[in-house]
Every structure is written in structure tokens, then in C-alpha cells.
Length: 254
Image (cartoon, rainbow, N blue to C red; front, side):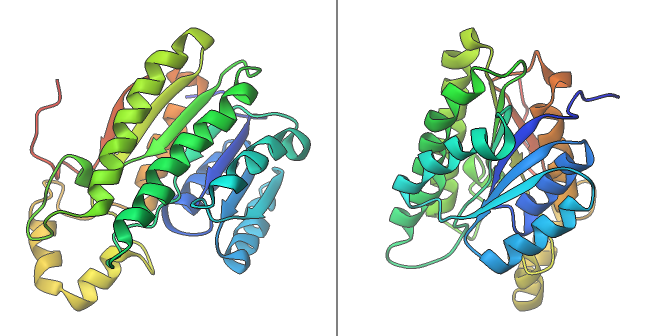
């Protein structure tokens, strides 16, 4: 299938490792020029060098998405650095860290960052012939997996998913599509589930046993879903939440 992505321009946040890096790599493989951001400068530069080897343009910005004032300048720089903007992938997240200020961190880095990112991107996307926004959610937004209990990550991502669906309806008249990809348990080097496997093996095995496909997912599984939804091949899909979890969540999607 020709996804129609060659020559498109995309922003990917949180792109130096894990899901973000896999998404950027998949888009680069489809011929998409990229503007990437992450908090860690060294890993971000290494990722950019790897992707430039594919022949696409890759620009970077060291950026903390919880810094609300930095988001709009970063997005508008796509005009000068890439020559336009077609795709925005909101991936940056503070994840499932613990601490007394974690709720505020999740609100700023997960929810508010997505809100401001979309706001800044809409005027640029309006000039694209195939504009798309993809937010990264999580199955934790609609599955309170025991024994984790209440947590800021799931609650914030639930709000992200709701906001994406609302944006999809409001931006549809402008031709801007908005979708969410919600991963289940995804394992990669240096990631949360690798640590859980090492430190809480019994819990890891219990989660794996709940996955009908029999194993945790990879960042590439998520990246392929994001790439499809971001592409012109998905031109009639908006307002959806595509779950990539190997069947982990036992709900019926109507």
C-alpha cells in the first residue's frame, strides 16, 4: 500500500527514544521530513543522525513540553526548518512516575502540552493538502489495571483521548483529521516494562498472561499504527482511538 507520505512534513515530540523514536523512524522510512523534540539533547542528536541516513531532512529542538511558552515557537519553526507542516504526533509524556507533584506534572506534560501543541499547529496544518494530528494515549486511560490504583498517567491520558476526539469534530470542516493511538503494555530497552520485568517479575508475568497474543508489544507495533493514521491512506478516519494492545483490554469496541 502506498501511504502517500513521501515528501510530507511532520513534528514528533518525545522522539529520542522508545515510542517516539520508533514513530520518527517509521515516518522517515516513508520519506517524511521531520522536526523532532525531546528533553535529552544527546539522545535526540543521535536519533537525528540515524534518520538522516535515510535521506530525509531531520531538524531537532531540545525542548521540555511542560514548558508551555516554548511550544508555539517550536511548532512555528517548522515553516523555516521544513518548509511546511502536514503531520503532528503528540508523544511526549512524563509517564507513570510517582511523587507528590506527579499530578501537576502529568497535567502539564501530557494534557496541556497536547492542547497547546494542537493550538499552535492548526494554522500551519490548514495549508496542508492532507493534515493530520495523532495523539498517543494508553489503555490505562480506560482500564484501571490492578494493583496500580488511581494514577495521574491514566487520568491525564483519558483527558487527552477525549480532547482529541473533540478536536476531530471541530477541525473536520478544515480537513484536519485528529486520531489517537492507545498502546497497551509495550516493552523496549530502558522502558518501564523492562524495569517491571526485572524488578516485579510476578506482576510482569501476570500482565503477559492476560494478553491473548501471548507477548508484550514493541514500539514498532505502535509506530506502524501511527504512521497509517497520519497518512493520506487514512483520509476518511478521524475521531477514532486505535488500540494497539494484543487484545489486552477485554472490552467490546462498538
